[in-house]
Every structure is written in structure tokens, then in C-alpha cells.
Length: 471
Image 1 (tube, rainbow, N blue to C red):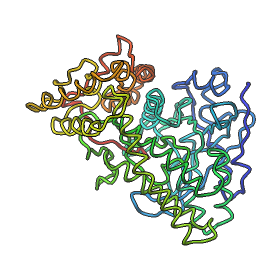
Image 2 (spheres, rainbow, N blue to C red; image 1 turned 180 degrees about the horizontal axis):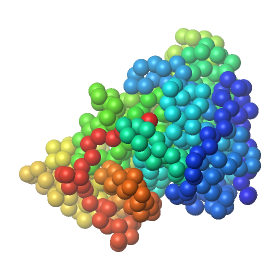
Image 3 (cartoon, one colour; image 1 turned 135 degrees about the horizontal axis):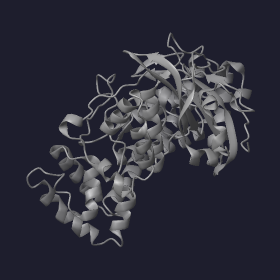
Image 4 (cartoon, rainbow, N blue to C red; image 1 turned 90 degrees about the horizontal axis):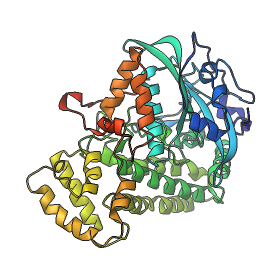
């Protein structure tokens, strides 16, 4: 095995985590191995046996821990959360990009930890399938995300509303440090721990940051770009709690996530989001709210409280403009536009408002723009005809709009009904639909001919209106 583990987080003081060995399972069997990602990390895919993917066999150099953190969950403060069903096996090292030399490898669903809070520490097949499919689709879409290295069945039943097949996901991340990790140490009034964490996180992710406010600035910029990316593909995270926001700028913790079918800015899928706090259009505001909690957690590191508040506010107040610029650039490309003109914002908002009133399918509308005719989707009387001429006149001033749109508008996305059908088939012991989706979602912009049926919107009886965490 050529991969090298170097577990820097486990060298932090022991109050940052609990030592935790994965709980053995009854009968491990492999569901899937992500061979491309395995090779990228330095693994021989053949080394990733079912026993490795469940934690029954630990690879040399791993040092399993469960990380502690806190967080605001739907706005309510919880002072101690942590990995309640996950073990961080360790960090693999390599050259993954600029200032990017480490990847966490974590088992999700590996058993009870000191942070389980009366939970069973296990995962069932459905959420494991969902996170594998959606996280790898997000990677293919160019959205920063945790990755899925593999998934395995445990041979055990996991009890939720009824018994389901148990499974474990092997997740890869730039790190698993969250806004809630900083909140934990701030909430404990552990200033030394907070400083250690900030120095560690900055050196690992943003080495140019010279102090906590510069670190915050980097996180703000990363999150603005990330959430703009979500919005551009119709992705709804569904549970944007502060413990589900990674400071690396990657999408993490897919839970009740979903992609829009019919577009409406107030769409909510998560069964636990009763008030629409994390509705589709609310995601930028919630991102800034979470970042404000990070800023608050960092304030004790500044020697002057008044100056700290002023500096943190200045950093946070950049977010709306940063997000708007990133969002506009994404949607400008979706319309085939590479240059900036004054009327572009009005052109984008005009299409989106017509899509909302027509209940137009988000993905199909934008992919249809390459044919210059989305009238079938934007179907309210006169809606398309009142918008298209201005857009077509704007396109005439562009060099190669077709290529721009083809690169910005996916054809295949993880449709909620397709994922649910694959999960149901998996519960029944048929994993072929899951494997088909796993392959197809890696080609969102250029699907194989045999996968064109996956581009279709759900029929009324196929629509999935509620999604669930699975914990």
C-alpha cells in the first residue's frame, strides 16, 4: 500500500476528541468502491475490502478518533454534539492541490461513541446510498464537497421506524472541522483550545491567514462561492446547522438534501424543517448566519473586544456582495454569457420569476436553453415569449454561448425520485439501480445514450416532497 497516514488532528490535546475503535459488524460485504478516488488518494482499490470499509480491519497508520463539536441546530444552541456515529480513521497525505496536502478518511455509521447521545451509532442503507450518490454527483458538477470512497453492508439490521439493512460509508474530506468545532471551545470558555484549533485549521486550510480575522475572511469567501454553486444547480442542503458547515468550504453532511424539480425559491424538502428555515432561497442568509456564529466564537482570541467586533463585522459584511458576485457569475454562464453587462441581473431574475410562476423544472429549463427554446418548461402564457427576445439579443453579443451553457447546465442530476427508487431496490436486495446511478452521476454534462431516461422530470406520482435524515 502506497498511501501514508499522518494523523495531525489526533496529535492535538485529547479534549479535541475521544479515542474510538469502530464497532465490529456481523457480516461485512462490499456495496461499492470508488476506484478513481482510491487511486487519487494512493490506495490500491483491492486493499479496500469489506472489512476495511466497515472498520473491522484497520489499515496500518490509522488512529481512530471521534471528534467533539457543538452547534446551533435549527437555531437552538447545543453545547456538546460530536461524532455520534463516525470514526475519523486518519489523514492521508499527498499533493491534492495548492495548499492541500491532507485528506480525512472517516467511517460513518461505525458504532456508538461518547457523543452518540442515546443513538445507536449506526447508519442504514438509505442514507449511505444517498450520500454516496449525491456527494459524488456534486463533485462531478464541480461543487466543493466531501467525497465517498466506498460503502459496505454490515449484515445487521438497523432500527428506525422499522428494521433496515445496516451500512457504513467511507467519507473523504479536506477536514471535518466545522463551525461547531469552534463554537464548542468558545462555549467551554477554553481559550487555549480555541487558539490551538484556529492555528491548526488556518495552517491546514488557509496558510496565508495571519490572524483569526484573516482566517474568518477566508472562510467567508469559501462559503460564498460554495452556496452560489449550490444555487446554480438547484441543490437544497436541508439542514444547514452550524455543525454541518465545514470551514474548508466543502459541502458536508447530506442528510435530507435534495435537488429541485419544479423551481420555487421557498421549496423545502426536509421533514424536520417545519418553518422553512433552510428553504432553497434562504440558504445564502443561513450561510451568513452560520458565519456570524463562527465570528462570535473567534472574538475571545482578540485582545480588544470592541475592535474584535468591529473587525469581525467588516469581514462578515462582505458576504452578501461576495455571494451576489459568485451567484451572478454562475447564472450568467447558465444563460450563455461570459461578459458582464448592466442588464444581466434583470435577465437572470426575469427567467427565474417566470420559472417559479410556471413551476418549471430547474434543470430541464436551463439545459433547454442550449436549443434556444425552453417554452415547454416556462409554460405560463406569454412567459417565454416576453423574456426570450431580450436574452437572444444579449446572446448575439457573445462569442460561443453554446459551449458556455453546455459547461454550466447539467443534463443529469440526482433526481429525488430516482434515488428513492434505488434505495427501495437496495432494501429489497437489488443494487443494480444504485450502481447505474453511481456511474451516470459522474457524467452530468454528457450522459451516455442509455442514460437519457435519467434526464426526465418525475411524473406527478413519482414526485418526492419530503426527505429524511435517517438518524
